[in-house]
Image (cartoon, rainbow, N blue to C red):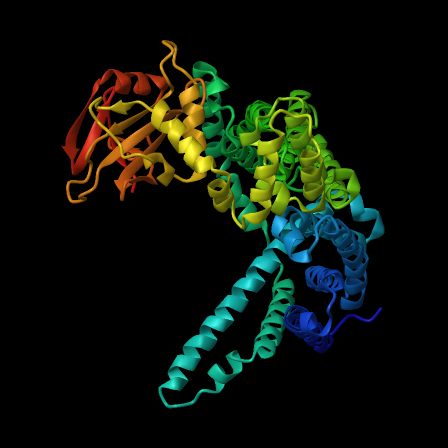
Length: 593
């Protein structure tokens, strides 16, 4: 075979650049047409969704695959991935009366995107050689290369438009508006953006030896000791204080799961695609091994916190997403820990686990778009059954979400609830259902249902005020958002060891320049965890203005139930610290606002 000459290579580069630029232009124009023109021409939102998902997903995958693969082969592979995904997304959207409501849910689009994101590296490896579709080195390089190419490509698009806007400003000084006129044409902007992106992706692939993911991977490895230190400190503190103070808060579970994902990513980065490129230093290997071994403990705490929330309020689509994510992350964690504890060739076992789990996650994304994992139906069944058997009071039912967020299963659930004529709260339930359907927002539903007033009145009776001679106007607690009202009422019901309520409102003037009554509200959120809110009384209504900050550390205040007990006993004082601060248990606290 004749050796390629420099002229041949130049021609090949030119052809590739032209092909990628053309794909980018067509992609940009297609996306513009689908979003800007097709809805006007086609009065069928569901068909519009199908076409938009197939075309947008197809071009996204094509641009990711083209370069390493010929454009025609990349387009065929993209078609094979995007069309079934678009069909599944359109099928899942039938759970809702409108396409807009389906997309507003968020999780359906996330599942579609996740499926394409995970499947694309497998397609890239398969295009290189069919036998490589499970080859970890090929998959690892493909995934990171695609990520780097897209990141650099979109960065270049942003730079291009930045230069275009700057050029327009310069030309505008002499009365030339050609660039401004061009920017006002939507299809031209879309076509130019696609052209620049396609061209950038082609050039980035040509320079793959210089712009590779290896630098980024090496930098990410430096984060491993930091993440390990945070995990060790958290687990040690949780062991000493007990984890019950963390329970019942979905944000706690989300934070821990996010940290677990970061640890999983860092372990994968550390082992790289093979042993030759993996970490070799003994200290770093020990750090990575410790990350893998501690992962199950961190995920277990997250699952416990999540389950407490589910046990208290039942399933919702968001909690189902969190639970499924937690199950997947725990599977990763167990596989990593077992691989490390078995010692010999543990990195190879982790790589095999990564391939298997990637296929599992892609499969779950597909199942999420089928009736087998209908989150809205599962959540609705949970809410209805909990109310029917008395586990959930009327105030805890997600009626507004069922009416406006959970599509047709939610509507069917409301009908089942309305038919519970033997239930002692049937009359009140019918009123609440009518209010939920009529209200456009959750806050509006709370006002229509009277929850805000009822809870505000309950809070006025339940929340102790300090100093004891303080008096609030009637309905003051109605100024708090419904979420904070419910949070405060739940805290008051979590009594201290001496049977006093787990809440207190301390009125204190922190900002002498603000001519409004101010205070801090301490709420018991668990066995030992405290939530602190800074509030002010404006027009007879309490408004949350932020959290509390420790003046010593500058960080958000970390308090225990002892702080509530001290405040109830009057064991605090207000003294100046720039702003006036409240001193509780030796800590100086000021509002974060």
